Amino acid sequence: MQHLTRYELYSLLREAKAHSERDWLMFLVSYWHGLRVTELITLRASNFTENEIIVQRIKGSMKTQQPLMRHPDALFNEYDALKARAAAAGNGRLFPITRNQVWRLIQKYGTAAGIAHHKLHPHVLKHTIAMHSIREAGIEMVRQHLGHRNLSSTGAYLRVSDEQASNAVFKAAA
Image 1 (cartoon, rainbow, N blue to C red):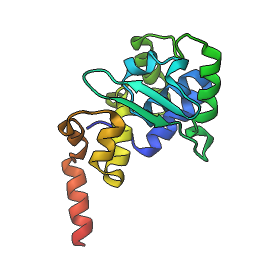
Image 2: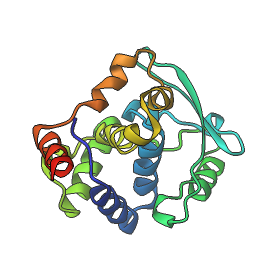
Image 3: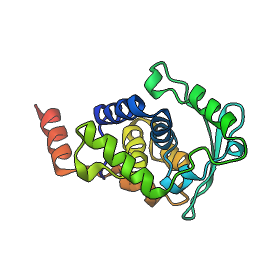
């Protein structure tokens, strides 16, 4: 499963924030909440309560309600920026751009951050939160967080590459 390393995610967010608060926040919200690009660009202020985001997932997935992330590293703290953006959006969309524009932005900032081209698509942020959290949080928690109805959808994040398997085995056997 193609996903960003923690360093690549940090680099992407840093690059986006240096150029656009909106673009940084789009990527951050997509990451923290495991959103598809369509779910992201249709968000409105009505999707938020005081401390939570409510998303009706698409493609047969469930509706999820998740806390907004407060993080000690400002680059990963969505809370204040998202609250301000929701207040400013009124009844309109928080991120009034197209899917293609999101695609181009992730390629632009990802390329500037030195991330391999094959990883530069909007869905990589959903894959990234899943891959970063599945071993620690467990498959059932990640399934619920991503809004998957079917556990097999989430199971794809348990797969490992030959390189990962070899490294783990060699480390355990050494």
